[in-house]
Length: 342
Image 1 (cartoon, rainbow, N blue to C red):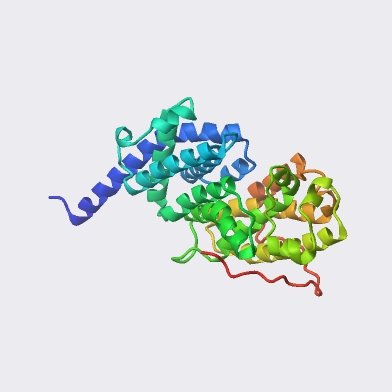
Image 2: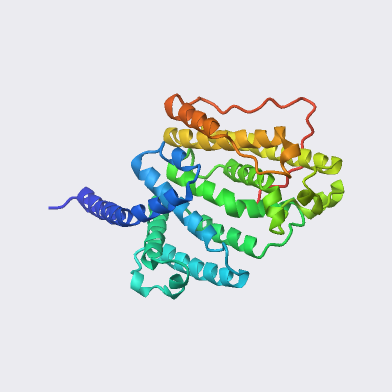
């Protein structure tokens, strides 16, 4: 006679088998997407155990594919692609066992050579979301963020910019925390600040590149307050007004990094190595931007290959027990940071 325990184990085993079957099909496709993208995050992902690393690559492949949908096509066409992709993902998240034949895949033939791979990707994302209890909102927020880039409108103030950062960066970070594991029942609020810090670093790094595409992500009220003109970016000269504004951006971003550093003590031991490497890599880039602010309008600054290798070796071999932040001068002015956007 089957005991209650046997009855409980049966469904769990079935769920594990179903998950492994989906991952076995989707992971090779997602791994190839990640390999082609040559992301600097891939070495960090490999510090995880096999199952967590595969889940992370699937989430990264989803983000990469979503971002690529909007590249090199007219805005109207990109909107259609993203809306179709969002509908497909939303339905797959709500009905993870939905057969592919019940999905509208007509839009895929216009954008990819292997539509089945996209179906496999969607199935893998839904499986990871269900397996690790990731709230679907964070997965869908990624699409919302890309849509904001397509329909770009200058941000009026920092509150609007922070909401954008939450969609394109914090949402992904929160999804990662669910995969790594964290202390407590709720995701630490500082996870939002980590995504904002990373995205603000991206914005500062890409100021010229974005300006050439007609996008300046620094809020309009701050540009006006400091007396800065967007056209100055393309001239390649950091004026005194821009120097002051950049200092203000650096101070605020530093504030977010300091808040985000507390996440280190709240993630699992395995996740701590990955978070530590990602955080240290982004923070090192941020410090390089800060030291070389006069070059920001002329070139895209990056960390050297050897610096990245050194950071990877440090966190892989003898992981530090804490994050190192640059000592903050006692007279450093704290910028006003708006309340965290949900």
